[in-house]
Length: 245
Ligand code: PGA
Image 1 (cartoon, rainbow, N blue to C red):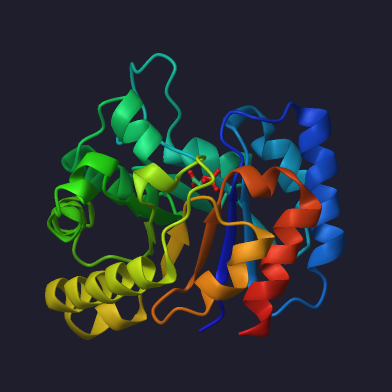
Image 2: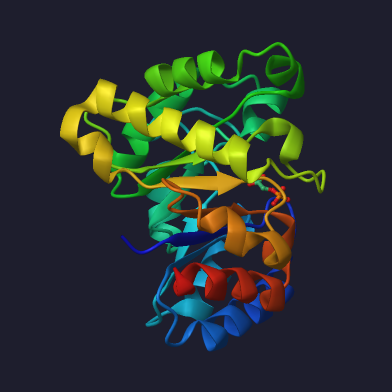
């Protein structure tokens, strides 16, 4: 299966630089043998989608509400993301779980809303530093998968150890191999044969220098890239590493 390289722009990029970055990604994406996705903040989705129209680079949101519409001040629905030009959405990112108290149950409701609106969800899971030090990483991630993914599940899972996000510390290839094999096993246990086909991304300080090694680990189906996705050169270097596999 082709690898998916997804950029999570987080709360960065006004519309003008978003448009420029999207155009640079578009120009460098020609001929790459991986799937590419950029996830701008809400206000830049339409701009990025316009810059990428007719290309193979997809656009996604970083969150959506679990309800289709209603009295939810400040929230954005999955249909609104779709209307703005998104076809994907990141859900349950650890920054949302931590900063907005999102539970597995809420993430599962959001996944259902996203799929209903025609978006492909990327559901993030991953342990905190304390949980890893306590030897609970597989238990925690197993619970997150069981609680956050509806059955059937038509989407992508991203393993993002919280301690590796934005810290410059990357999980070792051995850690990633262990966790991705465990996640694959869990997906097959919970979803049967369909669990074999779910792409599992790695996220957490992926950069051009470590991407080749991380993307070569068995059961790694791509990367979810934060910091390095804000720069077209780095993002495309990671995409080229994914295309070599
Ligand atoms: P990072 O972020 O690449 O900056 O560590 C990854 C993410 O949070 O998705």
